[in-house]
Image (cartoon, rainbow, N blue to C red):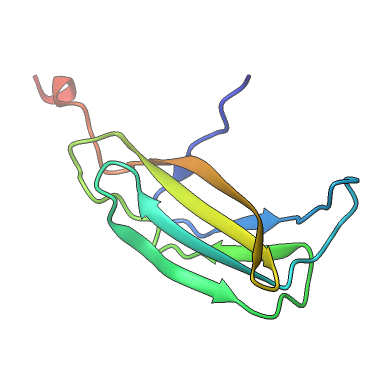
Length: 114
């Protein structure tokens, strides 16, 4: 498996969600929830957000440049996690966690100054 290219910090990204039914065809849920956190600290980047009703499928979540920032400059990368749950009425149809790595553009190895 090839790991996706890291996301540059301070860049907006779009995460496209395509909800599908058991047959694999697009199936729009009545609502879904999402939350974005930093994996190491569990700091919330995007708080629990509910979309009701879902009027489009696919749906795009935008993570802004201001939200895509490194929290600890001691690391060259940080991992972010988007948690999703989708529903039909009050019945949860599924859940998933998506991960991406955020590249620290300000992190410079100390060896360059030795």
